[in-house]
Each structure stands twice: as structure tokens, then as C-alpha cells.
Length: 368
Image (cartoon, rainbow, N blue to C red; front, side, top):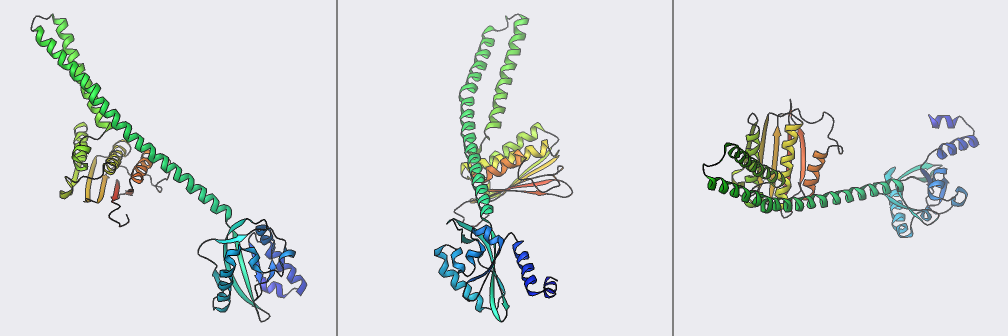
């Protein structure tokens, strides 16, 4: 359409229209002859490179790139000019350009060729992507910092939880046990010669001591998975699910462990991450998805963990999984990432969710 309109105009007017079209582009459009000298330099090129059109016409295109790339660029252009291709990307990645002030810029570059009056003309179409790449690099840097901070916090959490658990067990737990022993001793020494009111108070005191001991044990269970360090992941999973079934007798809950993994010991930080992801998945299924049936399946090898938690609850949101906004899901991702594992979420029809924690030992070599 444009070529037809140009053919109906005079030569001078057609050139003016063509120049106006070129200048309307925000990208740099530069044409060169067979010798590599510039014959067209649009307004976009002036903006991107900082050179005026008058200054660049007749100049070699090499002036617009760092000197270290000029020789290989010349070879590339000659190969393209001699080929049968009419259009080609200059590189799979960004191409380096040189601004008038000496600053290097990143460009997305495409090279085309046409015949004008029996002469070959090469056309370079260049987009300045410097700011975009800088923004992407900054975004990756911030992501890396946040991930490193999250992993550090997770490690601090693990250390603090372990220390708190030990102190609760060794200090408060032992103190309560001593109080109970002392109380039972006093009761035995008093015999039957105790006023009814005192006897009733002693009974209540004994019940309160027993309740405090149970509460401390429950806190310890919540803080540090029982049996994880002593007997391994499979035993800790079994203990966790048994406790859940006792507290929720109407819940259909089951554990399936690959027989040869029953006593397998994984690195402590990996087993801890897998267990905590399983626990978070259980909490989500019970608190948010109203699940009535949950199964946990552990399979793999001594260098592979494939832990899947499945439920029949209301499932995840109908939209794609959010990258932000759900602390539980983010926490599972970060726990897995901290030990080189991944967590995958899958919706199940008609309802339900599969949450899979997958870890491979670096010694395994194969990617996840």
C-alpha cells in the first residue's frame, strides 16, 4: 500500500514521505552501501547513538560499535551480504553499540538487505534495550538478595527452634517433672490424714502439673519434629500423622512409605525441609481446604526424595498459582529452595490438591 502511494508521488515528495516514515520509528534504522558506509540515519538512530544525521551520513557503520567488535562484525556482514538470506538477527543475544559519549549500549539488532537501482543496500534495525536489561538485572539482584535473606532467616529459625526445644526439654520440662515428683511425694507422706479441702486442692494441683507437662510436650512437637533426628524422615512422618489422627478422629489419613526408605537417613537440613513442607501442606488442607481425607506418600532412593501430600479439599484457587501473596506457599517454596529442592502444586479434579516436594542429591547429577 505504502509503495503504491509513493509511486504516485513525485520523486522529491516520495523521498520526504519515506524520510518521515523512517523518522516516526523510535528504533534506529540505518542503511549502508556495500562498503559499509551509512546512507540513511533516522531520528531514532540520532536519539539512540547521540550522533546527528549530518555527521553520520557517509561514515562507516563500525563507528557505532565498540572497537573490539568491529572486525568480527565486518566478517559477519560480508557473510550475510553473500548469502541468500534477506533478513537475519545479528546475534542470539544483545549486540553492543557505542554512544557518542563513549558509553556502551545494549541493542536488539536485525539486518536486512534489498536491491535499489541494481545495488545492494543493507538495513540495520536496532532497538535500545539497555534500560530493560538493567531493570531485569536489578530485578534478579533483588530477587537473589531476598532469597538469600529468606534462606538465612530459615536457617536462623531452625537454629532458634532447636535451641528453644532443647531448653524447654532440659529446663522447663525437667523442672515440671521435679515438681510432679515432689507433689506426689508430699501426697504419699501425708497418707489419709488430710482434710477433704486440702485433698481436693492437691488433686487439682496434680492435674494442673500433668496438664502443664502435656502442654510443654505439645509445644515441643510443634517446634521440632519428634524422631526426625533420632530415627529419620519416615519415622517423623509416621509420628506426625498418628498425632493428627488422634486429634482428628474423623479424618481419613494415611501414610505410604516405600519399604526400602523406612530407615533411610537424609541430610538433616533436607529432612527438616521436607517435613516442614509436609506439615504446612497438612495445615493448608485442614484449615483452608476443609479436607476430610489426606494421604502422604514417600518414595525415591537414598539420593532422592519424592514426598507427595494429597487431599480431597476444595483445592487451590482457580486462577494460576500466585507468585506472591500466600505466605504458606511462599514458605514451602523457600524451604525447598534453601536445600536445592522444588515444590510443585497440582489441582485435582473434581477437588483436591497434590503438593510434591522433590529433592535430588547434588551427587546424583541429574536435574530435577
